[in-house]
Length: 291
Image (cartoon, rainbow, N blue to C red):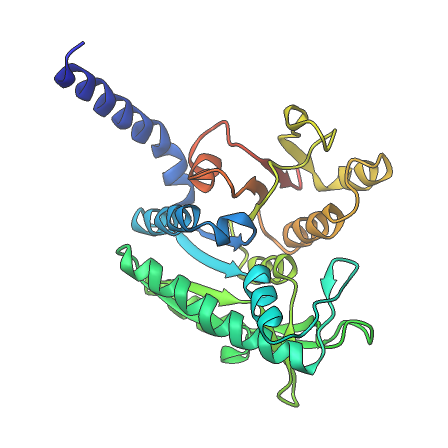
């Protein structure tokens, strides 16, 4: 087979992929999706560029995209440089005053602005925000043990809606505030679910370092493709949902109860995983819905 024939075949395959994606593009067009971004996809530069490029593509075809991000590895790196010890209880960072200052600096500063800038460099339009901007995420302390870890008490999406209405991508770092001006570190899954619920989003997509919910955590072939939230208590009782997956699934469930149509856990380590989940019939992760 000569080079020209191979190029024609490759181009035909690309055209067929786009044609097959059309119904899903039409389904999500003018709808809002919230993407929770973290894990390995955030620290691998090639994966990061692929994710940002995918978000620009989704926006270009008329899908309203909100990006909610954490930044645990970047926070850990900065704390290490400052000789501040990282402590975790029940999977959440214990956040004293020194630590929350670093969290604010890293998340609302470097990480947030780097992501917004990268989207712009790829031809998109993004504005970096934190949960402190526009009185977005008001908090109270989760408990005494975790310090400045926030539990969301009020949420204001006015600024986010205004940005979406102008076809820009809001890039939101997961820190909040209280009436005294204190800053709070908020779990990214929790914040993304609350934001998706407040926006009545069509979908919440959580990018993780796992392929999805597995019947056997050591066997990727046991991926559960669809879960109804009414079934989650039984899955917890069976031990299929356990450990660190419980709060993640709780966030999915809460988002759906607040009006989100569908929620997905996908493997952010796979390039273009968000496009494969949203724009193909087969998907690639676990989808949660009511019925």
